[in-house]
Length: 218
Image 1 (cartoon, rainbow, N blue to C red):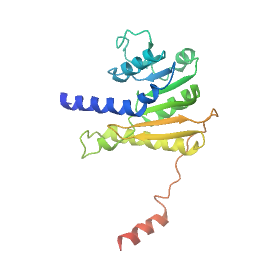
Image 2 (cartoon, rainbow, N blue to C red):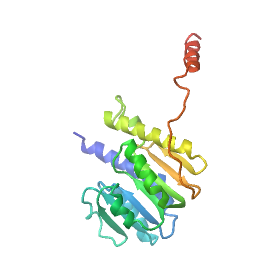
Image 3 (spheres, rainbow, N blue to C red):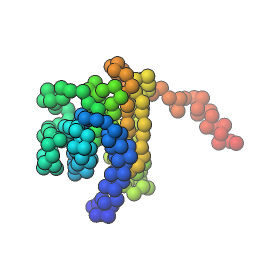
Image 4 (cartoon, helix red, strand yellow):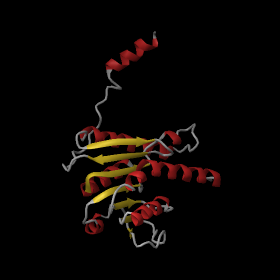
């Protein structure tokens, strides 16, 4: 069972992470349109709403659990559905977007599907934020020790690198490793994205095996 102290520390880390990694960017945007996938405890939702109220913006938040009571602000609308309910959401999201925050189902194929589907909504210069991309806190000897989170986060991290590799001229990519980590993609051009491909690394090449053998004999 997670202790109250650990939960408080994780919430503090989360607030620090989102504030420094993308909320400060959002504060600079006038009349921002924001989409958030995954409301959970409403920490990020309330902070985004506050910025939208101050900057005359609007937040559309989506979750498959009823989070409609998180706020009574007129600067947001809650959508009680899955983030891949494209039949419904494609009718709702008929506008260009300044920022999309993805913090819903943390599995690489799902993250890729959501990213490619909603990325075209982003304005040039717009931000796409992925939460939970670092596996480091979930390693066996670390404080959050969790097999599923370790594997899923590492697979998401690798998938984002694959997307970047195929679209280096179209997007910029930044990472934060505070807490469970975040990734930020900035849309550089309006061109459609190319599909991701497996990275052709030389990690398991014969040349690298020889390099390791030589290194070990030094």
